[in-house]
Length: 543
Image (cartoon, rainbow, N blue to C red; front, side):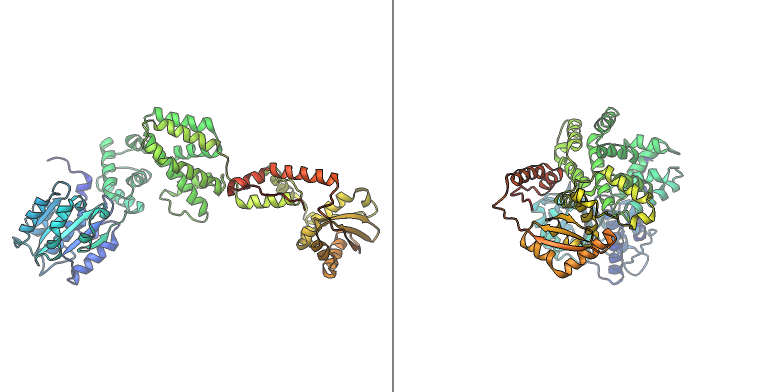
């Protein structure tokens, strides 16, 4: 006797053995128990998820002879069940829609449905891949499908329901099969390998489950291939070798090189995989899937999101995702996704991948909108943008500084202040940023001109609004309170408005404004903002 592959050997023979289609199974069992089975059922879904198997189980359930009528639990022992299992039942005709797609075959079917079943209760027609029928064949089937004889049932299976005419679908009760979850496939493969006394790690079985993409038949076929490679026991390395697959570690290393901007590392790894004969189009799909996983993990830091990989691999990917901002990661994923058509139809996928890698490595990474806004805000205040090194140094200083230093304010010496009014004003503004932040925009348009023993003079060179705001008694009282904390004694604040007429600027002010405008336009944060928003600079105003 020839070898029976696992996909046939472990085909489900009862409703309870079907994996991952509970919504369909429960509906069919309830329909049988309540005698509400439709005369035409359409099973639609991806390949290898159990459509034809469920159709055969339905045939057993409707014709099982162990009982007075149809049963949701066929016995698989009576002559009718055994004949259906063996595929020799006279009352159950299984037709391949791809090879019997013409109008002549459907005319023959229409003639045969008139005759009653020879043994069972129903004559059942199972048409697999029904979407392959011609338009004429579908038209010939319409009337029979709408009003078949009481002893006839139709069970249709298809992977492309969109190709079936709406007139046919409307005459059927449609059941949508879904892809089987990876964990369910993994558990079933583990059960099958134990029954076969085949030793294989759960990690390797997880790889088979992921490669199957939701198809139980594909998963069992892959397990069959592995068992042929090593009949009794197989290691994880041999599984990768037998399947020609790439492990998560190698994918993580390649992804990490691209994220780190390591040109030579990424190209060398690609060249190594090419020399080992690895399918580069398959590599592209896995790389795209890896970037997709990184993006999902980055968005869902508290969980794992819809990422069908083991927990230890999730931790590896999370470490990679933490190295790159979300915007840059989305940019990399989008650029990789856009190359799909070029790689799919190219006869030189290695060249296309190399071009993609170079493009990814040379592309200027996007900056988050929050960082751009913060940088522009610092620029507006006259401060230089912080570098990563400066931020790290400031954070380290704050962590190691004494607690008292974090709350004490610097004490200024009014007697010595006039020698350096600008430095005193800059330090005072930093203090006011914490005490009177709402007044800071107007204070930036003012200048400290004099410091006396118990008073200081501020000249407002901004607009009339700035002067009125700072001269307000309540706001002035808040300024004096903040200055009292800064100088350590009572200080009176005198506000002198000096509204600037923009039409009467000195040559020095004009040169300064022109220089500031040039500096603003050359600033990297402005360039990033223009790139992110695809904008142009309309005007630069110096306040």
